[in-house]
Image (tube, rainbow, N blue to C red; front, side, top):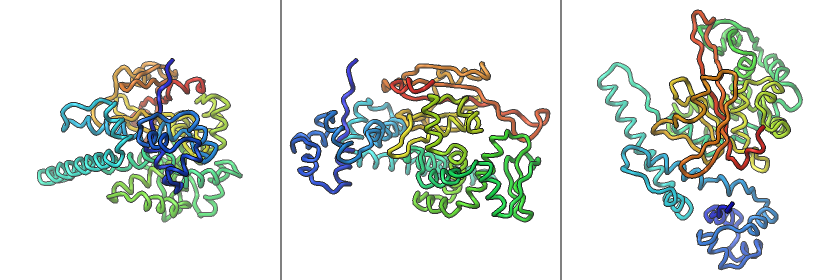
Length: 409
């Protein structure tokens, strides 16, 4: 099988600039000639295995950044933006790769311009609705802004992840919840609060959790509240760094970061990564070992991208019975389009027909990348007994590039 040549001139140039080295000094450290380095930085030559080895040995470089870095994400984002109906036809992927690798600043400028165009259209649509109706439908741009924030962080938020890991480092999660509850003067009770999964009564100091949720969900919701109470300053500082354009986006991201803390506390990074590798990412085993749901485990696997200790890059999605994607995270090249629907041949849609079973599929995307896809239906009862509350059915999908399939059970 022919190996794919690796062109990553922008990443090479970015690394050299970050280290404060001239081309001559950098070439000497890598053991190559100055002209050869110049050709690699300008994508006239691929990066050789010798150079990759030198990067690792000399600069402790994370090779994963070359495989799935900003360039790959940028190509996906350009492809997605150009699927907007405002454009007629799409450039070939090879042209998008050339733009992302040779002119990344221009690519980012185009994406920023397209984002501004989308937001302007959404504001106009909201204004039109406000003029013609009593209520205003909020635009989708805050959700897209939050989605992009997590996307460009590789779905990994280091400060929040390490804080959650420290929370679970010397005690069990349940013990941590109990100790924090006592410190904060809060009692936890289960009771039907109008279908809410979680509700904090500030006056009485009672955190109400839904009696109809699973034990794993109640544990997750308690940790979500602890994140807001105990680690509120850390979350606010992270939000400040993100510089969201609207308070709506900031509020959405705050919920997302609290959820991130809860998942990371239930499934602490190093311990969970080690367990995942030992059982070859068996979701059932990991769910049982950590007292988490299958969805929580699959979601967490898509966030294991800590620099220097990365796990298998997974994508994770959750869809409802109508085929709408309700959650999406990807540490792979595969991204999920804002425009158009998911492929109807994808096994995640068939999972509703086989409850309780994992479906496996080898899938190929238009750019030629192949993925191992696992899919399974999950049932999520909320709000009350089945006779007076609907049972929400979803399907989850977890996937990785086929080259890493041997690491999955």
